[in-house]
Length: 407
Length: 82
View (cartoon, each protein chain N blue to C red):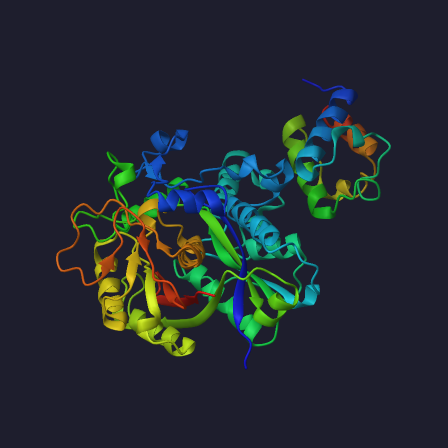
């Protein structure tokens, strides 16, 4: 029998909580992690969007001063999540050459890049930090996590916009299946809440501008949705060869059953349902499961007018209406490169607890929405051997679909 | 306004503490940045960069390699601000 890849550890820092337990509790309670931004720069730079999903527990509260000075916030968040995930899996002694990392980011160290450019302009080139490059490079979170746990089998960074986090978990799985590693810390991170990304996404008309109702702004599938809400944070899962996990007596939370990845080759920003459908079908084929086995979908569903309906149609086409769909970005906002990882963790926990988290703020659902949406309160999922999808789609036409199976 | 050597030492110790996590009382004049404090070249450049701003001096890159001990750096900064 071929080896399988299982999940033996989880770590999170998100707008809903500073760890997995608090984040999941808040998600099941249907709480919003979105708030008004209380920063000087909001007024100073006339930010068009004045709310976002900031970390519930600031990274500076749990990291040392040198860690916060030497890492961009995007790497800091990955370290917070990776520490929890590694502790969760028991901080095992493992051959470092059999341990890898795959940590995605959509944008990279944008805070470092822009603040150092500010330093340059205001104070001259000698005031540019010598740590600028190692802080801003998008592979820094993967490298920092590799140093945290001593992972020497390879440290990788998929960069595929908002599909990055799901892609990272898929690549981590493939790393194990191809024989390169026995354990991989995989996930994604993003720290985009800076005036420039906010203005830039707003200029694309991708962001909600519901400044008078921040907590109601992320409303996937609601007819009044007007764009996504920016979020920040990181999610890391510990992927492990099943035989390795069993041999060391690790607790197994779920199995990565399938992974499908496609590209649209159509438009640099607009989603293409055809590519999304192929990703979901590829994941199904990879898993050997049938649509009947899928009881839950954590949808990409960002609360944009175009994206949500396209994906809903794809889910209905691939799975019918048998799966309970959750759009957790309604609570967390959109963590961009961190989204797919956080949502994979939600998917694992939904299967563990047999509860699909709610989708909040849907007061007027799209008429004839072809999916069974979990609204306002968690929905029970059936017992037995079941599986769930997590979708991640990104600007550039990147589509990643993961299937997580219960154990 | 010129800083005294003891103020410079105190300031350097704070910078090293923030960049590396070493306790400030470990940063004494006789300590070697590399051999005693385990500060690599990139971290040294960062300490220098922050020190330049803090003390309002310039420490040319070619002089940094001559700053073996914390005391060397204190003396250099004291003279540079004079």
